[in-house]
Image (cartoon, rainbow, N blue to C red; front, side):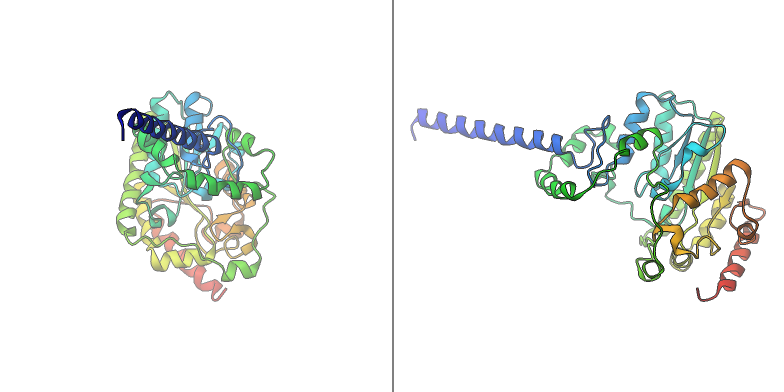
Amino acid sequence: MRNGDFRKFVAHVVFWGALCFLFTVVFCLLVDPYNVFHVHNIRDNGIEPNKNYIKMSFLMEEPERFDAFMLGNSRVGSIHTEKLKGVKCYNLTYSAGMVWEHVDNVKTLLAGGAKIKKLYLGVDSASYGAESSGREQDPIRMSYEYISAHPLAFLRSQMNTARAFKSLNTSRQHQPAENYAEIFYRYGWAMDYDLQGMPDEVGRWGDVSVFTCPEYREQMDRTLSSIAELRDICNENGIELVVFTHPMLWNAYKASMEELEYAEFLRRLAQVTPYYNFSGINAVTVRFDNYVDPSHYRAQIGDKLLDCFNDGAVEEELYAEGFGWYVTEENVEELLDLLDRTEEAYGDI
């Protein structure tokens, strides 16, 4: 090949390579399945967004916009935090969130100038039983802090043309909600009151929804250590910390007791911080129609938690079953005994 022809060949390769690269970048930026390049204008495209990154990006623009935050995985997504009294609370829920990620978020918010009066943290067996490895490579799970520290790794994770093309099919078949963006930015919760409960046959025979990470004991240690760290941060900054357990569906609760040593978690949690207990087999958790799916309770049940937080109001029948108990080191064994007796009383549900 003559020199002139070779130079033309190289020029063509460079031109078409640059064009392909440009197409890949622009296409992925525009499609943006996880909304990470649309943090100011999130779209309901039928695909789970990276809520950790998007919500934190939104909050860090005006850190004093809220003075309280609801922390937790997607199960706190049914709690309408605008109903909490005495605070302006944002629901910082994101899918499969781990407690140590919430701690990082709180540190970031405080460093950014947030004036936090109160923090709410919801936990249960998913807080230590869910798989947590590989999150730095998962475009949905990458945290705000990780992305801020590793922007190139973040960009590489998003420049996936095949994944962007595949997402278009999902988006075409999805009917977006009209008020999706408004709710996301104004409140942060994900489940409204119009979502229907599960039919009995779905709840009874569907996925029990218990995470079974093989390293759950090590993760329990890390989760409790992270809660202790959050407690200390709150004490140092004059922040009130409210920890609570979720009302897991009865079969998920039983499986957590049997497979994930949930009673041990409740016992050890009381040694770290007092908490409100909503776990157990009770008049709420035995009804499948109180749940959107095997993992998530309806907003109507979230209101029962809010009544407890706001006014200490708990229905007498539920309180007698351990729902709404304020648990400390002194009474945790009493609670665990009550939960055992209540489970026996319900028998074969």
